[in-house]
Amino acid sequence: MISLKLKVVPGASRAGIDGWLGDRLKVRVTSAPDKGKANKELIALLSTALALPKKNLHISSGLSSRFKVVEISELEPDELNKRLPDTSQS
Image (cartoon, rainbow, N blue to C red; front, side):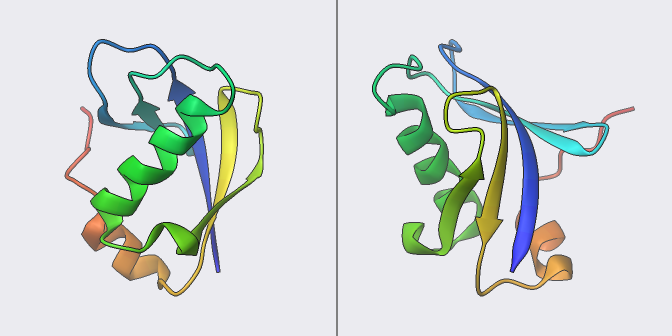
């Protein structure tokens, strides 16, 4: 199981994975942080980006915070890096 640290920006004009901010992956979602909508969009976005079923992704901490930890099952760490879009920042 992989623990992925995220900084989530809810209410963004467009959804996407922006890249690494230190040890956290910055992810934008268009949904507002209202009644779990942004969390659901986050899981759907990561599921699509990583080509994994949603059931393999679980928010383990930060349900009501911008700083979250998502547990990813059935994926190896090097496979995670291959599946993430090229998010290198200079």
